[in-house]
Amino acid sequence: MSNLISCSDYMLPDLLCYDEDAESLSLELDDNSNDGNETQYSFPCDIEESIARFIEEEGDYVPVFGYRSKFESQALDCFAREESIEWILKVYTFFRFQPLTAYLAVNYMDRFLASRCFPQANGWPLKLLSVACLSLAAKMEEPFVPSLLDLQVFGVTNSKFIFEHQTIRRMELMVLGALDWRLRSITPFTFIDFFAHKLDSTGTLINYLVSRATQIILHIIREVSFIEYYASTIAVAAIVRAANEIPLLSSSTLVHNPGKAEEWCHGLNKESIISCYDLMEDVVTEIKQRSSIDIKNNTTTKNNSPTHRF
Image 1 (cartoon, rainbow, N blue to C red):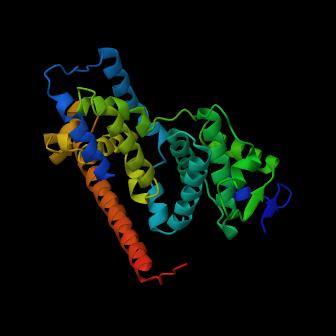
Image 2: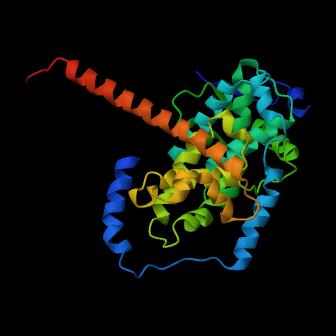
Image 3: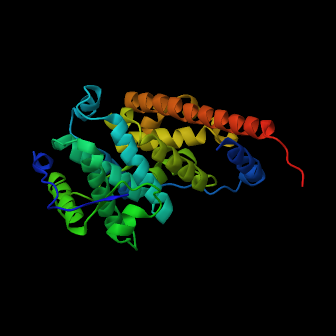
């Protein structure tokens, strides 16, 4: 049974203070990629300058310094944050939102938590914040925005708390105030197309690189460890990691030396790229291992199940 929470119920003073697919893709494109007629993509100087300016300004759209230490000191619960992000991703999947919408919702939540004291009583304050952040992100990016009620109940099997319209609106205003109304954030999605073309100048594998990098980015946003990396660094690491799964690109010098991607644009930091890539590699490898174990366990369960003949 869900609890309907309204503004009058609570006061919130504290709130203010895939490898196989890649291989087949490469084989399919192999004959077409060596015919000597590849189109080489290059960017005008103004685009290069725009990307460099985004890199220069991206620090304004990350949580304030010391946010990660709040989780390390247990002032904030990393598991509660992960649970909130899982909810955001479930709703994102159900409504087929753009990946940027999900990323922005998490970005808003992190920036708010970094700058405000936040109660953790019974888990409902963080759920309210998650709903408000996803609602704001959807308004920024989606052509169709579900109602606040639909946003809370569709795609989620257990909605422990359901918030009234007015309660969510008040939370949205608090988030807007904490973010100084800067919702048009710089994210990894600002950069991934540009960096994908830098890695594959022929443009042949751009769609796969961007798609796979997007999957990786949405996986790692759950991890507190990535909070300290800027959006451009995450984008570079994700593109290089995606290239590692494509045989045609896996022999590239960049795949074995991600730090060389520093040359892609002024403002990138070699050490940060290498550190982020190594951490990303660990996370992706762990996810694949877990998936393999799950598949193996499911297969074993099926094989051990009694066979019924009719």
